[in-house]
Image (cartoon, rainbow, N blue to C red):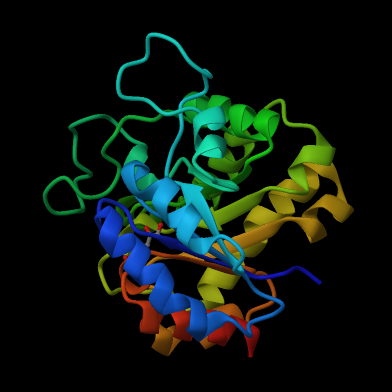
Length: 267
Ligand code: 13P
């Protein structure tokens, strides 16, 4: 049995005070949720305060990104040792918003949504190695844009992104990591991937892990779904055999809706 992981990716939201207030509001709502792992991923500036507020609870804290070097002349970056220092246990890697070509918006999304910050598959791979080396649990995101889906390339995209991210990762490390299927077209759009299809693509990712590391690893690895996951669709998504949790954006910004999703995983 894989323990579901419900993670809130707050993206560029919440001050330190707001993050701490959120933890204090969430704590009593989820105090009795054994059998579900709970994770909050605030902005870097709120990590330490959020981790302190969550100390002694069943709420864990993770970063939204990291750089693969530990320290040095890398302006604006944060490393695995510094995430650990701030109290993190996890880190999101290769979120679609961090991928792509910097400043070149996806043609099928408005404004600068979609893949915006230029992380390549090779960068995702280096970040994954850094996280594993330092004992952070990585949440590696993969997923296709609407254009890629319409062209029939969904499976190829997630297979290729998964393989590229895991290049050089040992089987023993692979079982402990988390993958997240986040179709880019479903993120922040209110357009959820239908649960059968989300489960099918998570299955494709699981098979890919199996091809790389064998059946035991494929069965052990956790695969989350992310993209407009909300209290009203969470139970359906989380009830599917290949979906082991959710990576939640918008609906994780309010303690009551996030708690409802956590409870849906427990049910
Ligand atoms: P939304 O839940 O807002 O669609 O965001 C999903 C996501 O990108 C989580 O990482």
